[in-house]
Length: 515
Image 1 (tube, helix red, strand yellow):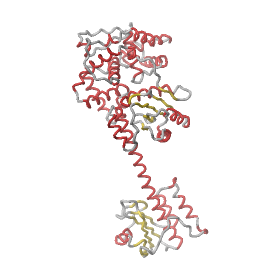
Image 2: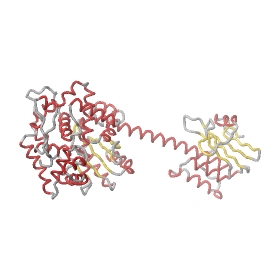
Image 3: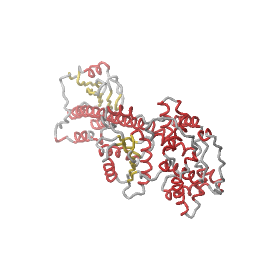
Image 4: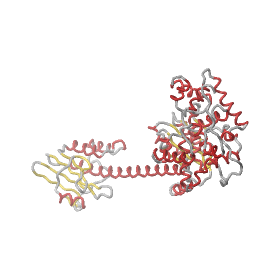
């Protein structure tokens, strides 16, 4: 047996002699980044020294690699405690060599046991000694790698948590969370949102490239809803150029960006970025920024729109402020995307999203299965998000949605937008009107029109490039087209609770096949 100071191993892997250095080169190969596998090193040791058994175990005898070996507990305790650095034993036709191996904390140490039928010569002893040193290095590196992975995962989760807080307009909490690791990151009133699209397999590499390109001065998040997306929230004006450069350096990458928005409107900016991303797929440089086109709400009387919004959402004013904000933010995302995607972005279950939206439906007396109702509530929620003044009571008489949509500028816009559909030889206008009336359900629209459901889907898909708006995915593009149908009179406005309080009478919907 060898005492604690009787044998020293060197981690520098000194080769004992050039005549027999092949094994040393093989051992060094196991230390390369592509070959760091403890089990493979133990197997290699057994094959190299002709061992019948090799085992690496911790202080409790639990195998870490190799096969379990029956060892003397007292001897193992002496080695683990440091009283002995190594030990040798022979008997019953076996030769045993035990060497102490330092383990990463909190473990104390382990034991490398090698059993041979032949005695250990100098070569075999050197190989076992150097392998034990190599195992210590690998164990230390594995712990370092594991710590790095845990830290990277925690940082990624923290970035996602900040984004989720921004999505529900809790900017104060988002700033507090971000201040610890990224001081000053959210010390801004406005920001832009970008969505970078690649493939799920290359997303991690793309996210790191975005972090490096923006010099960690942006919030870079792996999108929880779409595996191929990376979301970037940034106050920096130069971020657009930096991210475009990332796209140039990574083939098959697309970039969509929002207009500059208030930090509290991150969810709306995210919707703009996704809309721009769809356009980027048709651009030569594969990038696009949300276009400031004419939106229907900008053609409405601001004061009337404000009063209508306040009256529509007034039933929610009885709730606590944080509950009201949570319901409105969830509903805004749920109307902009699917419930599943909204749930992933917010970090809640899809049932939670649906439950919150159902509460809003009940408060507003609305039916979200009706696309016209969804478009009206979406209009109100976006208007409410932009209100910076105190929400005082409206002084004028209640205005119905139909009256809100009767302005000459809005009607001109609506007729001009829908007139684009007439350039197609198919009856895109009639199909789209029936599809909206049917709540976006192709089968029900097909029954109304007396055609096949696939025809309805093809017509709706064909209307997208004509109108330059996405229709098959929920969101602002779809609701703008719905509002155009309402403003033009192609579809009657839905019945909302404020309309009924204003002594309005429900409109009778026309036959969409003849409207």
